[in-house]
Image (cartoon, rainbow over all chains, first blue to last red; front, side):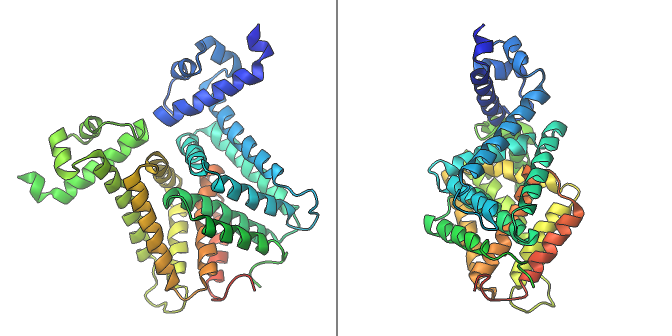
Length: 191
Length: 191
């Protein structure tokens, strides 16, 4: 059965269809609508995601896994100094923002989280992600205050592009370079 | 005619109905649906907002005007030191986050901006807001790099609460106090 052989591909199609359906209709969208959007039967959808909760946590899990992979892709193998992960995080956020479709991707992700973030399973997945990042930054060799402020400021630059429209490339580059430079010291920002 | 006498109240009812309609149905929602949600005729809606563009920019304008008012309410009259506005901005963001409905408000605002941010008139209003804040911070007496990083980090803490769920009150208070303390020096963060 093709469904079994191509399970990852079907899963991808279902998640993309679910994202489109939530963006268009909000979190109240029915599994029937998602199945129709994906071009599968409701049974086919339930085979991969047994409930709406499972589908929505899968969606958020996918979004976070993709961001994790973007950060990982920005780790510099030649960099073994403290702040290595913080630098990769900053580069990843600004690479997303600098991408021609960066604003759309961000709008897409923010809309999904805004639509789904109040659901218990989604919230649990998001909190798990928050803990994962906190633990990873705790091992990055910078004072926790420093890595927190740098990464929050990177996130906030992304938010600004949502609330203030696309930022100037020069402003983006300056902010990224400032945040990267701040990773080159390790102590607290405030003495 | 009551419509004229109570124009601000009717405008408020229409904007709230428009927000609910966009949250439920996205930016493709029709003026008919908004009018029905508000309990007015389509003609009554068009009297206040002659087009969907006008309604949606009115909605975003309202959202930004409310945030401006929150910051203004957090200006300390006894504070005449450099960084006064930056401190009010940080206090305002964290007051919103600490509010019992803070996560909902943020989700509400982010969803609206995410749904509407690609529309030219909304984008223009958002960019105007971005310029307004940049000019205001330029007069706040801190190195622009410092006020930018502090306010971006405050925005990013709001984003984190969207992506990672409600943050711990202790963590929120520590981050706010760190950002406020960083406004007490005026030079660049990076020497």
